[in-house]
Structures are given as structure tokens and as C-alpha cells.
Image (cartoon, rainbow over all chains, first blue to last red; front, side):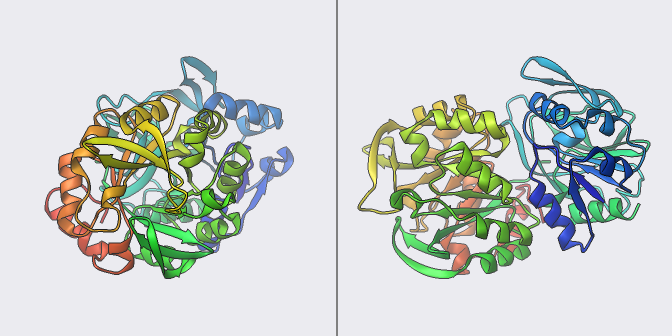
Amino acid sequence: MLIVDTKCANLASVGYAFDRLCIAYTISDEPARIASADKVLIPGVGAAPYAMRKIAEAGLTDTLRSLVQPVLGICLGMQLLFETLEEGGETVEGLGLIPGHVGALETGDLPSPHMGWNTLGSLVDDPLTHDLRDGDHAYFVHSYAVPVGAHTLAQTTYGQDFSAMVRHGNVRGCQFHPERSSRTGASILRAFATL
Amino acid sequence: MLARRIIPCLDVRDGRVVKGVQFRDHVDVGGIVELAARYRDEGADELVFYDITASVDDRQVSPEWIGQVSRQLDIPFCVAGGIDSVEAAGARLAAGADKISINSPALLRPDLIDELVAAFGQQCIVVGIDTFEQDGTYRVKSHTGDPGKTRETGRATLDWVREATTRGAGEIVLNCMNQDGVRKGYDIAQLRAVRGVCPVPLIASGGAGAVDHFADVFEQANVDGALAASVFHKQVIAIPDLKRDLAERGIEMRL
């Protein structure tokens, strides 16, 4: 298990989640180590343009685009897996590991960002959703989202339906924070580590 | 459906959790990591740690205990207390805090909100507001950790909520000082007024004393979360019972 130091994430809390599960991991920003890892976790918080710039400055863009082992993106790390991301009126090129676009979450009259514990539903069978049930809660903090589509493993609703979990081949993502999602998150991280 | 959040608040002084009445006369209620673990196990949705002496003593919350708390918790937590720079905020987020909350330093220098949002994103920047009702108007106070150093800011609460959210704050915690620690219920009228001008998540604080108070603040003020301290520290209300009762009333809860 390798956690990519994307320079834009809370690496400590992701690492602590694996500590609680007694799963060994390394944190690295070295392309060779990332490319050869068994599993790669891509965390991220904050703004997409900043994150993609940080990844490029660290010389990681091509490495992350070429990953063939199991990959899990978390929160912004999941959004970066897609082809394009909208943020603050501009469109940013993502890693392109999953086809699709990330747009603003249309919350209507509801407070934004979408912050708190929301339910997962319309679960599609996958090792990562195997231990989940419809109605399990996960902790979200975001104002952009991936629409529901062919890659959706779990859906959540806040103003609109959106993808809470996605999968495209070896690449998966969680819009919520599994490291802060109690039992739900622990089961997902454990399942990813034992793929 | 998004659940309403139940948020125990831990006031930290000198490395211990304390609680006062109307921000005065603090008594020791336990160790930081022990209480954090207890609330996690009881089903708290989030925790907030306020270092209540930080601003008045001109020092900052210790990242060491933040790391210890982050190792323990599989729920989100927010830290507050004297954070007055991008560096100070970054140290706490790097130590494992999910959000940082700023109060007095933002009142002294509102640009701090913009700087923190630019550096870390809206999602982790909370603005805490200590508000006091006097003659029917709501005013903001600062440096409330020490009654002798508390200051009138001259700001109207609703104006400050508008300004803080315009500057990019991702969440507002409204501490209604008239109600703090006296357990007579949240200030529904004031929270409704703030809800009307607050486009980001709003957390109610101050006055929780009974299950009905939580139900009232969710149903009548439409807040996203309810924060409380003494009723949880003194075990007047057990969190599992509270969440079950609220769910039975039709309020969305994470059980």
C-alpha cells in the first residue's frame, strides 16, 4: 500500500486510518516507488487547479496516468481521476484514468458545501462495496461532484444524485472520506488493502 | 439523506478538557484523548476542540495532542484557538485535524479568512462567532476565553456572518453566549435569523439541556448540526439515546 504525497492532502489522517486497521503502508512522492507499489491511494483536499499543479511540480503526472495496479482516489483525489474538472469557472485537465467530467454540485437552496454524514445507495457489487448496505453513512465534504454514470458504484443525494463511489477497471474512488467514515470507511479501506 | 450532526464540544485548557458556565468558572472534566474516544464510541458525528485560553494568552493550540486525537478518531474533528496565520493553520491540518475554526483573530483581521481559504480550501475553514443578544440586537464579542479580556467588537452578528461567508468560510458555528452552559435551550430566534443569511452549513451552540432542545433547533432553526458540552460531559444526555429519540421524531440521524 502506497499513499501518494500529493502535497494537497491530509496524509496523516489517511495513514492513521490504516494504522487502526493494522495495515502497513508507505507515503511517497517518488515516481519509481509509486509505479511499483501493489496498491496506490491518491488522497486530496482543496482546489483542483492547485492540486494538479502540485502533482505536476512533483513530476508525478505521467506516473499517476500510467498506473495499472489497484488505485483508490479519495475526495478530491477521486475527482482528479477523471478527464476534466470544473472549478471556479475554469476547466482543469485531470489524470484521465476514468472517462468523464467533474462539475459543480447543484445544491439548490441547501447549504453548500455538502458537509456531513450522508447515506450510500444503489450499491453495485464490488469488493469495496461488499460489506456495505444501502443506507450506510459516510462523511462528505465537497462542492463539486461526479454525475451518476456507467462507473458509479454507490450513489448519494444532496440537491442532486451524484457518484459517491466509482470504478473503472483497476481505478476506484470515494467522494467521501473513508478515513473519517467510521465503520463504513474502515470496511472500504480494508477491502481495498486486501484486493 | 444528509444527517443532522450531533457535535460534542471539548473546551481545552492546559491540556485538559474543562467546562464553564457562560464562559466562566471552569472545572476539569477529563483528558482530551480519553473523552474524544468516549464520544467516538457513543456515536458523536464530529468533535470540536476549543483551546479557550489560546487567544487571550497569545499562544496557540498544541499540534501534539491534535496528532493523538487524529490517531484515535474515525470521525472528523475541528480545532480552534488562537490560529492567526496560514502557518499555524497548516501545522494543525498536517497534524491530522480535518477543519480549523477561527474566531477572535478573524475579527481582528478579516483577511485571514480569505488567506486560509486560498491556502487550504473552503471545506476546512470554519468561523466561530460568539454572539450576545442585548436589547433585541445581536452583537459579536471576541476574546471570550477570559471574562476579564472579552471585548465588544462593534460588529452586528448578521453582518459578520455575511462577511465571513462572502470571504469563503465553509461553515459557521454560532455560540449564543446568553444561553451558554445554562441548559435552557438554543437561541432559536437568533439561529433562525442567522440561518436566513448563511449559505454554508450552520452549527448551533449554547444552551442545550434536554432532548427537546435538540429537536427544536433542528426543526425550527434548520441548522445542520447542534453542538453541546456540559450535557454530554456530565452525562445528563447520552448520545445514543439522544440520536435514537431524534430519529424517532423524524429527524435524519446517523445511527
